[in-house]
Image (cartoon, rainbow, N blue to C red; front, side):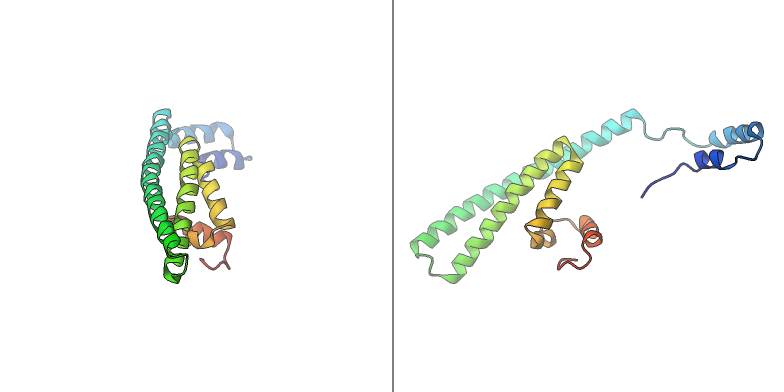
Length: 158
């Protein structure tokens, strides 16, 4: 949603009024408001905290990836021992492989997000929308699911 400065709009829309009287009143009105609310210090602090948040998520994702990898090796070795005959074990191996893929994609997206948050989020959204629509329901936070519902209103996860 775009935020407009109503004072700028008022100055440009009042073409027929006397400029001198409006500029004096406008100057008095502007004294009550902050001229530039986003100072340089606030922007830098916001950028640093956003990167730290993505770094924390990346650390958690690395733990998830290591757990998925260990689980995959264990389940794969059990499947080799049983010659892939146990259906429940094969299904568990497939779900673990899917978790490993998701962990890998999320780690790439979070690494990119540390450098450029918008690009990292776009990369992960692109993957989940194109290749793993069930992952949107399982992985993507509830705050972003609303955006997916707006993009694809007739999707199975909307």
